[in-house]
Image 1 (tube, rainbow, N blue to C red):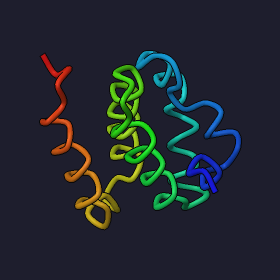
Image 2 (image 1 turned 60 degrees about the vertical axis):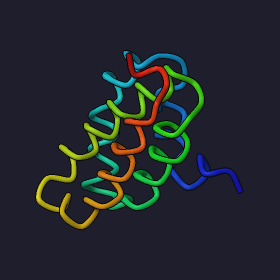
Image 3 (image 1 turned 180 degrees about the vertical axis):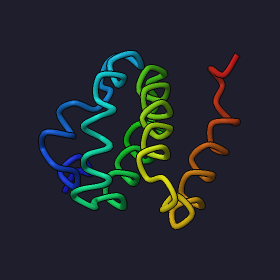
Length: 99
């Protein structure tokens, strides 16, 4: 099963597929799914595995931006997911396109 099926269809369809700028319009939808629908685990897994760790540089940028939006959306609950966030961010330091 692809990881994108773990997230709600409306959210998976709107995640950063082509450009890191496209995720800015999806922040309210991301916050809604994190707060109201309480699907943080599947969304964080999707963002880290399919976007932040992607081979495509634009997907990585969009994934990081969406991960930052997810951190804001989680608010105080971020502490429960901190290890997942830090691990994904630390992996970016090995990125050959970081310069």
